[in-house]
Image 1 (spheres, rainbow, N blue to C red):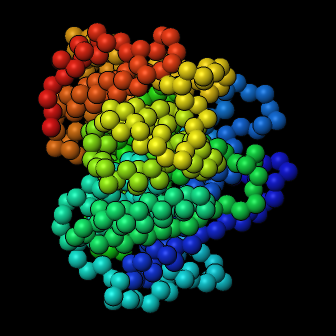
Image 2 (image 1 turned 90 degrees about the horizontal axis):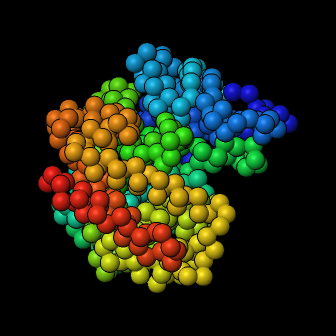
Image 3 (image 1 turned 180 degrees about the vertical axis):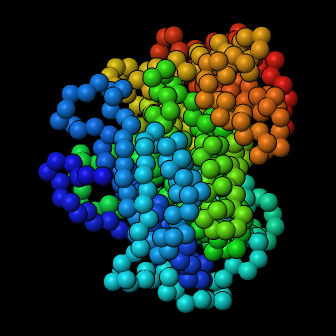
Length: 467
């Protein structure tokens, strides 16, 4: 990777994994420290390599795939050069980013001291000796629902929310949520032990960075795997509702990694395989909410959780925007509003101190400019899904409309299901998704945004019952 024109050849970044080691009461093993270094290097390279030179006039569809060559210092280069491990990273990154990655692992300079996390003295009082449930905690609504699910299992396992923090705004939200969870006494028999990894790029103008940051998901998933390793567990969890995890394109030009694949089922399958090899032990990542819509996931919400939900952030523009000022018009804001409305909790956000830039339910809103483009994109997608589900063979029609769903179906053996069973789940999932969007669109103070009731009712009547 070459720096962009006018940039320095050297960049400063912050990487602090000592809070992780301290929370676990154990030093970070070398293989875990290497895994964090690899993920951080890839994340930073992704940010420092804009997909196009802003000084050139290039059509949008040509501003995408890159070729990146990285030499990453590690403690044991021979281990990481194993073809299955290196190829695992490169194939995963190709799926996450649509880029051609070439990774070389070199020996870390002996002049570099071990990080404090590698020197952390064992603390028996903090060591996790029994069962533990690790859940990635981003500060979003879904991650809170995942924590609530884990806490609700009701055993004595330690619940470990694992957070990657790249800004002070994200840190404030993540910490506030955990404090509020404890305050409302949602934590019952399960102790809570938060862990965190800090990383950030310093003094690089945003104009010289790649805004999509598609490799960021690798950093979060690596933290989950490292936390599981340190806690002597073979599994960690993410929480992302199914339609958000699969993340079908909204428009025909939005193929591949133009929609985020951070917790896509294929990503999680490849992460499981990669870290099982890298750590030389079984390692699995599980999505707690995969077969649920966001509205169905929100059925876990109780009245005492309302103050917790009000602290969560779903806006795609966070943390560039303050948590108290979500845009209201991005797909994540729209799906959140539809989900809360579907479970009768639409007053949660309106009753908080949030100020939305755009509220489609308000009669005084101006429906002009870029802010309404996501709404039109989502309506296009919902129309495409609706047409597929109205066909005599809705599963086949869904696959024809969205060929990328074949990647999900191909994972059926991991879930101990047949392809037709996965197909039934997908048809049910997207039918429920349409009903949630229809319900929200019906509240818009704008002509032409009501639900298409006949087809929605038709799909609901024909959806198979799948547990």
